[in-house]
Amino acid sequence: MTDSKAAPKAGLEGVAVADSAIGKIDGSVGELRYCGYLIKDLAEQSDFVETSALLWDGELPNESELESLRNEMKAARALTPLQLDLVRRLAGEQQPMDCLRTVVSACATGNDVLTADPVINRERSIDLTAKLPTIVAAYDRVRKGLPVVEPRDDLDHASNFLYMLTGSVPDAHEARMFDTCLVLHAEHGFNASTFSARVTAATLSDIYSAITSAIGTLRGPLHGGANTAVMNMLLDIGSVDAVESYVDALLQRGEKIMGFGHRVYKVVDPRALILKQFASELAQSKGEPKWFEMSQAIENLIKARKGLDMNVDFYSASTYHYMGIDADLFTCVFAMSRVAGWTAHVLEQYSNNRLIRPRSNWVGPDARDYVPLGSRR
Ligand code: ACO
Image (cartoon, rainbow, N blue to C red):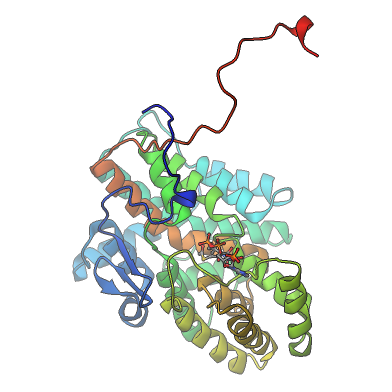
């Protein structure tokens, strides 16, 4: 289609570009469902591996399907020598999301990388979802000068990540909480990073390119990068007493407060409520209530001053901090979860593909004749 005048939809707000049966959001009542199941039910009763199966296949797996998926994921956790070597080379020089983006890109190998075959791409989805935690944990160990911890296949997905990150098997309750965080972040409809993945897949490019695009898009502070920005803000504020003056100064300068507002939710995001409970519980169990209390004070202030609700990134910051995860890894942790949703969307895009190619309104100069260099002023 040629570029011509029509009312633009800034930010594509409210524009539906495809049919999808993966994540459904009703922002007016704060409801999120994966393939029809309420996020609250999945958070309470499912786990990340089972939820990933649901997203990829559209149905909850039966017992033997789930068992074999758990085994496939465990078998795919270890990095290849090339992938580990890349992590080692990049860890000292690059930010975590830069390293993750590069190593995921390097996961593409072989001559058949471009295939849209659903069976092969489901296997690749499993492989990527299994490997992202290993990349993130190895990155953090290498940059801290610690030995890389190999994955352990007697540990579940969440426990294994925390084990590879810290070198110690985590407390079972905390690992379950972390697994639920992964469930909460796994899918969210046509958000910016998922849309990036689908745009890339829609050219019939490969799944690795699509996920690399998605990681680059997630990283921005208006999207998944907000969780790191929230933690940096909490660290910067430092105490509950300093919250009001700090936040008011930001608002007076017209700056956005990270972790608040949402394109789709007009009431509070259901995931944020669950994360707030986790942060509250961890504040007690760790005997360090400050980060939760500061977060609560900010939440109340932003509601009073701007009428804005918190989003999923707000309490995930203090939750991950209480779990001992460094602030600059938070967006990688988001990617470790959302990769399940991204890959589900890539599979869906390939199954009914149409090139995604919007148009723009021309606002540049009218047609004009080329001016030779010597005649220019
Ligand atoms: N702090 C202060 N004001 C805000 C905030 C905020 N966090 N969010 C929105 N507003 C204000 C805007 O300034 C704007 O006000 P105006 O109409 O007076 O200019 C109004 O609310 C609408 O905001 P937009 O940015 O136009 O809304 P949009 O739907 O484009 O953006 C977004 C949604 C990007 C999430 C926005 O709320 C934001 O920037 N929030 C902070 C970053 C953040 O937390 N991102 C994570 C989102 S969740 C996720 O991606 C996983």
